[in-house]
Length: 606
Image 1 (cartoon, rainbow, N blue to C red):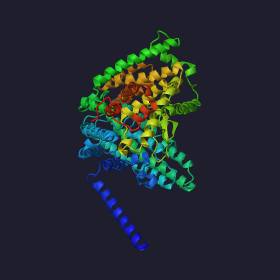
Image 2: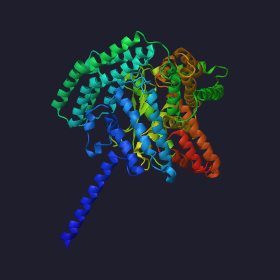
Image 3: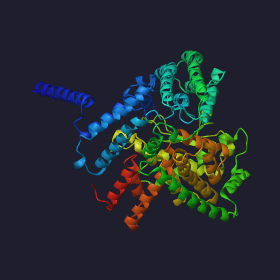
């Protein structure tokens, strides 16, 4: 009897394995049977075809799968077209599922993915209008940054993967160069001032002392922190790294530099996307992509002008209260930035003091934020400086999300290129934006959601992500994280900066402003330093539309919060509101706003 029962159990197990295998095979090769399986399919198709994303997420490592860490993602122009074609196919399959029976979050997720795939499919017309080599996020600085920050080296397998990636850099560069040649044949060449910055960056990267190169020094630092690799293996791997740098990587960077120097001879100084093929349509497309709204460039420009005026009025009121009545904002903020009490001394130890100050502000922000949210992410966040080799062309700060396996925390990277660019009264706002309650809180929360499809958990709609971070700055003011009027001036200057972005981004790409006109407008209206302003304007030039997402997103979150307050009345709970807007992951604003109205009963559900 017992043997018979065992045989039956074994048969059931075999049947379950066969059925599961059949279902997996069918899902991979055909239209998935359910919408949930479809969501899984599109997610895994994307990440399994992208080794760099797999390394960043560390989603396969818990299963012992690490072969992807030896490879680079495909950067060829053919791959760019394949991605647009895949979006078209996935959109067609998504629309074969009947959404009429979906309700609540399921309907929201369907709409969000449809919105995203539709936009990705439509980018085929503009597929080569982007500059893959630029001073902000070009392949020439992404490669060393990625290896230094995302590629962990804890044992021999990781070390061998690191070395294989070093060997693969020249092939990746060749793929990029083919894309640059294709773009050039279509009239897509970066402005001369962008080319000069990238050429200088490559020259800086190719330092004579190979051991000073970040690809060598960062590996050496990683090896010093692990006991899983023998001393002999460490020594030989560092020697091999020097050889790969000298014999392969440096020549590949020089090849790119030579190509860019040739382009520089006939490049122009026109800054806007309008100069590219179908430039006006391209800008409208990328503006929609980043703001996730249907606002036109003209409407965004006007919103910017209106918000600049409003914020400047608030700043003048505070300036008057601290004894600076009658001074224009540019002069007043410049004077404040230069006051000794708001400056770190210009000495070597100050850079470490800046990082320590950011860390202290972050700890305080964590404690003040926790009562405002119904849950808290598990992933930690830390503060580090932007790698020196790329800080000249980088923004004032940025955030890098944590890995999914918990090995790598979220990181708030601060730019320490010039101590004078870091007034103390602006540090709180920057911390709230990049870490808590801004990027880290929102992105780590999204990563840890279990209800949302994986595809959406790891899709970051710019207006949602950046809009939330700017909303977080406002939230800190609303809930008394600080009382110092100078810190509030720093907050308002940050918001003014984002409002000015609406004006200059549309000015450059829609109204055909020159780089110099945009620099002048930002300088006249923010009081920011000349180096910082120039760096920002050149960022918008290579990343059309992205800078508009911050203010548009913030205004959306504030508008929805007011709707919740007005509808809920005395029962309004900030934790409930935050749980709603963050509880579904990153979404296009037009879908989030409609879902919010449905939740409040002020819009019919459809």
